[in-house]
Length: 504
Image (cartoon, rainbow, N blue to C red):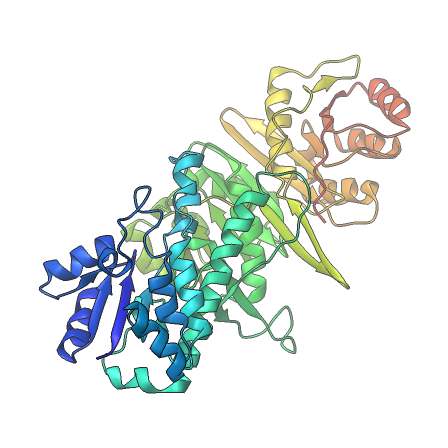
């Protein structure tokens, strides 16, 4: 008689598998809740404690960690080994069905304490998977309910056992990586890291047609932005990069906000009383560049929002929701992709990039850190309350523009919006010129936000010529006194944030 050990957290498909095994005269050993689930379904099982002669210890922390279990799994297919099992009265285990506590899902929750999270680190389950996978020439291991076979004859095929062993080791590797990442994020010292990623979507190509590309997810079956593609063809590599910039940008704002992104950098950002009004203002920032862009909204898309789009050509639209009346008209817009993405899902806390010879990793820039100094007015003139409100908006919006980043913003009542953006140039003065070119006459009375310091007074001179009245920048240049003197001579108000927001 063959013997199976079952110990699962995810009880999907457990009962049908147990019944099939029972019908084919397998002896079933099961732990705790797994045994209860099978017995409730009328499947006869032997509790683990009857094999080990021990009760479960420490509220279930120790139950399968016992020689009677692991010897039965690890015993090689040799007569002397099987004789030793018989001598001790321990069963030879031929099938191990185990899945692990959902540690990754638990660390994504915000309502659990550290002690509660630590209880979801599976020790016994991981040990069972590794033991069974190591001995795959004799033992079959099933770590995923979706792999439970309907035809048990496959359990006798070495190729199948090898495939399932690989999956078990991949499962424990990803599990250990999630635990390692959790502990690493709670320490300061750089440590060795293992990044386990799952191929989730083969992309048509990369940035260019001759480049191969794949989207890898942190979890099996994961989707970009944890979202759903509601319509349109599959997202491309470039779509995903642009969408990341747009989605990150709109999530910085509490009120209804829209961001128009082209080539990973915003060309228009606005916050207003309604999503439709925010969209109108964001598009007006740079209508020419908005052609073929991606747009993000931090509110559900409404019919008024769709009306604002008109027949404009877009690549993608991402939002937390789409009201039913919007789906039919949006479906008429060719290959426009609609992505519904949950706002409650956190953005990545770490960023990873490749360079020859290795990787760069950094903490994600989510804004001014909580311990950063207060903003300082460093000119003779202080900003007016309206200028200060516009500067605060501009400082939020400029964080997502490629460096050197310069952004011109205005405020009208409850509306806060960009009128010109310049970025991605080798010098900051050219970025001021670019922002001014986009803004035109709207630069008169606007404020300017710069992601890093002005190295020379020429940027302030150019801003004054455009009609800018106030500036916010980090400060920190060796020529700060010259830059401040230039602002005072031109009658500009200027604030130092003492925090930089480069985005390369």
